[in-house]
Image (cartoon, rainbow, N blue to C red; front, side, top):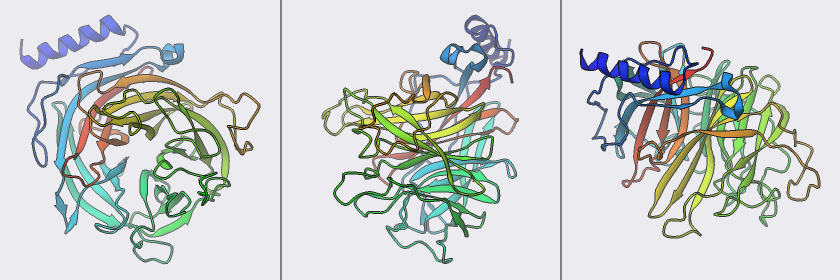
Length: 400
């Protein structure tokens, strides 16, 4: 029996033993050396082809999901494309028309123009083979000019009708409100969705977004609506996450056609999982989300502690019975009992033996063989101590 066939047999055995109701959660993979666009990949405890499953999220076995690890690729800090340093990847999506991924840099127009990249991600039956940076497209302001430095903070990206939806996080220090934009495929500004009452940062810090904890994630719902989420609570809603407390972050649903708000929900950020060398400096936040249909999403909670590194967990979220809190100006002062969205952990990257960097981007796409793939990407912060890191998983959902 060949190595490939033997490994495939092992995977089928594991899936039958752990998830007998999955009819299609098989993977034909081999243990292959990865080729990456630049640099080397550190050895991981997780082998290519290992499968990790959540059989019955929320107690609903019809929502079962499994992830088969396909490998890691790294682009070291300092890689230059067309004269501009590559990095700061904070948004990611898959373009069905081209079969390629697009990525958004969170560069605040300082190292180059605010920009979107086109990536060729080589995912085959052998796993994640390489990631190539093909080109970048500058994003333009409403006047058709490049954004001025520090005037925009791109964070999240989804492909929509006619172009790209993307968020600007705004900033408490600059008194910039968070915003959601639609740009054409060639980077031209098309429109901005409506601004939200209570989200602009107050000068005294009493209300609005917290600095660097704003619109970090974006999802396109099957209805066509746009969903954005804060990385932590508004100032008037409660504390940011701590070692002993979570944080009520708002999710905002916009009508994509009118650009008007339709609803708001509460997503409870988990407490910080570990303190490292300083509990005071440790952090956690909601860094990304992507729709998987039927009112459900996958979200990334990313934490960091000095001396402990990054902890990355993926959750499944259900919006169905969540309370619309758009008419509640302050969650902290509200006397009622709004129901947050449901969430349940489906994958712990550290727990399965990976060594994740600063994961801020996530997308569902397809490999070259048509396999449904979950791709994660890390924001290197343009730091020599970090890297642009990609993890790929084959994703199988019950009923597909």
